[in-house]
Image 1 (tube, rainbow, N blue to C red):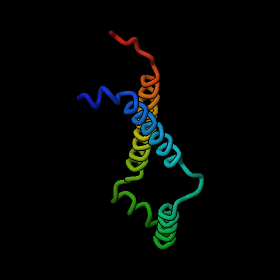
Image 2 (tube, rainbow, N blue to C red):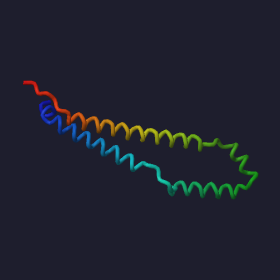
Image 3 (cartoon, rainbow, N blue to C red):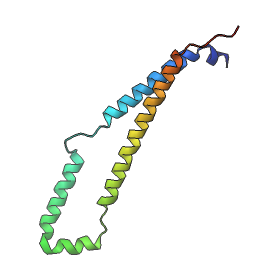
Image 4 (tube, one colour):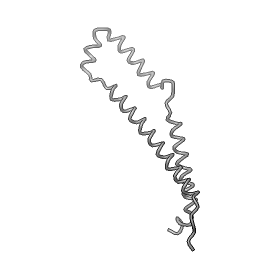
Length: 110
């Protein structure tokens, strides 16, 4: 416990810097890219080939037989994006809080 009290300022500064760094790295790493990924291109190609093979009349009966999962996938992606956004905002706020607290001067009691 004495170690924590003795090095409290250094620990708060290190924790704050680390949380800010993690927040910025995660934010810029996960920002959406403008281009399609390889998986999305492959899925588009497969969907195009399936539509070409099935023809015009066969697609409606096969679509009714299978439930459409794209709505759920899009909702999941949106939810995950919101989670990551809130996580990075929280990490940055805590990082600034720790850094700010470490620089506040306290009156020493004698």
